[in-house]
Each structure stands twice: as structure tokens, then as C-alpha cells.
Image (cartoon, rainbow, N blue to C red; front, side):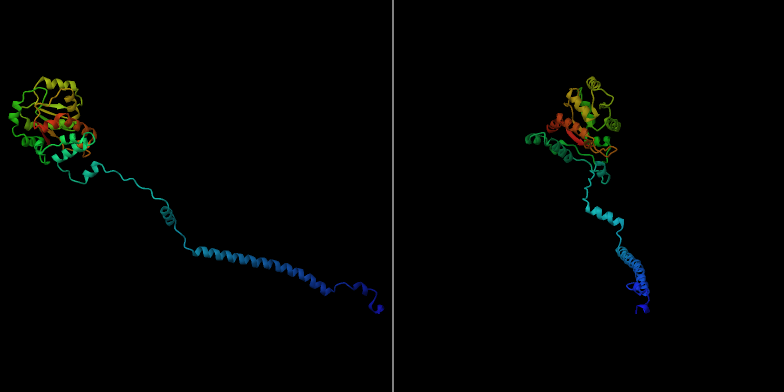
Length: 289
């Protein structure tokens, strides 16, 4: 038996057959091949998943930047815009100016002194209709208005003989307006003497001397300077018969004399310095030109 098999039979026992070796050698190569295939499959799956996500994202409607800003604005608290206060110019530019009347002046006086006087003193400021001249209806010049309210002017001016006083007092807002009104008096004044009563370029001492020097019939000026002359006793109200306020005239900004705070204050001071008292005693009358 041993001779038939040869001496090397035992050496081959336990050794793998060549076919078996071939199979074993093939298996690892197959395993190596299968691993990259698996990786490819995983990569393909992940790519497909990413594509699906991208397609899903693309399918959602994109929000435009304008809407985003609008949404942000809607969520943010709205700031309150400060309303611009309407000026006198804005109001009058859209409405027709109305002529002033005695009720306007009375309301102004009452309002101004409401927190400065007691109830009894405020009643003393109330003027009756007999204290007023007829108001200008915006159709008159100063001369035509004065001819209407002072029909006996020629006689009145001849009777006036007191110094440091005037018969007619015209109150306006500025020096330029004073000069303009004096020019308008040409056809009314006759032989009457007119004096300018404003502060620009004229010292108060000079005006006091002019009033003391001779007889003056008409005074035209600003309420501030007229009040100062009354305080210094350079001008007295004994002969005063008419006080005309340049009520309806408006400057470049469409402001009346009573719309300018400092002039309004001077005017109230002037009325309180004896003009209102003279009107209540029927010695003087007020007119709104």
C-alpha cells in the first residue's frame, strides 16, 4: 500500500488541494470587489437623498426680499410721527382773510387778561358797542375809512389846542407800516399835523420834545413806543378822541399785528395804560382798520 502511494503521500496529506487553493484565493478578491461596490451604492444613495432635499427646497416658494423687509417692518413697533404745527401762514394761505370786528378785539382782551385779573377786574374790561367805531370791511384806504368814522374832522382839528397830546392815534406794527399809513393820510388830514411815533432811528427824548414844542393832531406809530411815551408822560390821553388799530393788515408772512407775540404784548399794555378806560368813559372810541 505504501509502495503504491509512493513515499510522498503522507507529505500531501493535510495540504489543501489546488482547486481548493484557487477557490480560497478567489474569495478575498471577490470580497475586495464587493466593498467598493457597497461604497458606490452608499454614495449613490446619499447623492440621491441630497438631490431629493435640494429638489424639496427648490419646490418651496422663495420669499422675496421686499416681503421680508415688510414683515420685519410690521413686527417692529411703529414710531409716531410728529405732526407739524400749522402756522398762521399755512392757515391763511388756504382761506380768505376776514375783516376784524369789535368781538375779535373784545375776545383778545378777555383772553389775554384772564389769568392776570380777578373776575371783577375782567368785567371792567368789557366794552359796550358804543365804545367802537365801525370796522373796515377791507374795501377802504386809511383816508376813506377815517372820513367815514370821523365826518367832522375839520372842526375837531381846529378845536384841538393842547400840547403833548393828539386827537387821533393810529397804531400799527412797524416803522415801515407807519410811513406807509402817513402817506395814506394825505387826503384826510387837511391842515392837521402828523407825528411819527416809532423807535427806529428816533430817540424817545426827541419825540417828547416834538410833542411839547407844538400842537400835534395825529400820531401814527407802534404800540411799544406809544406806551413808552405815555409812561414818560411825554404823551397824554386827555384830548384823545379816536384810536384806530391797523388790525387787518398782514405782513409778508400773512401775520396781523395781533399775531406777532411781542407786538401783541405791547398792544395789550397800551390798551391797559388808559385807552380802555377812556373808551369806557366815552371820551374815546376804538376802530379796527
